[in-house]
Length: 327
Image 1 (tube, rainbow, N blue to C red):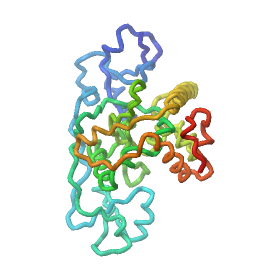
Image 2: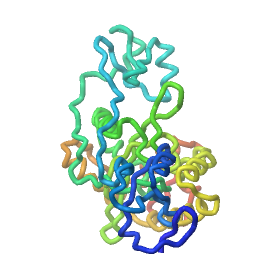
Image 3: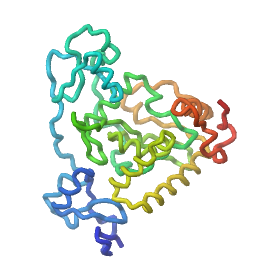
Image 4: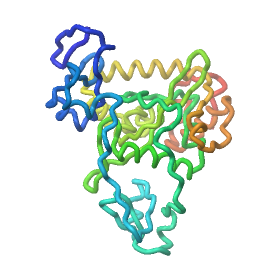
């Protein structure tokens, strides 16, 4: 039996539930419209069919996106990562509050050339063949096996192709986090980021890209909890995940332990990277490293993240001998 938000047992199968996709920022509105929270499944649902006020959140519905971006003629648009905001502003970049984008007030400013986006890239269709948009729709610790670290979509395509991919992901999500609903504005530090959701087939040893999802930086950091720990951000990552999921400290601890066990088991083997949904979308992939070389790359890249942290220091006994690389 399922439990409602009050902890009461409810009859009926979970399979019969009308599940809702409710971003964290909209939970109060959904509750006021009649949605109920299932404590066991950690998800919102409609208690009965035909509830018109809940239609915007019904799984599979596609309400019209809210307009956010407008084109303004005569501006040289810049592609400025969040961490470069201050540097771009100091170099003369200006912020368009309607388009939510930086621009150069005039062509030819040499200090801004490194952020110039160049010729427009062809738009990617928001419908990627073979992509499972229902996969990984909640916030959870998404630990990548140690043998797969730093060999992902971004490392498998050119920078221009990655720009094309992430902009498609942002645009189809209306630049809002697809988990908590956070959206960028001038008065906050919300930054959209593209995140990859992989499945792992234990029988075939295939790590398959299932979905690309738009996350805010806080949700992205919480998802990569292992990396957040290395970077000294574990406390804030835990706080955010607990807030979004309505978890107690004990519930988070249980989830973290389960994720750690799963990571340990998966890190004991090599994985074949399957990015076929990108290839089917016409995205050109770079030559990917051999499966046996992925851990070597991971060790070197980890040192860049934290020079004092080596792959050997994390879970050496769980990493196969061929992955134990001295840097």
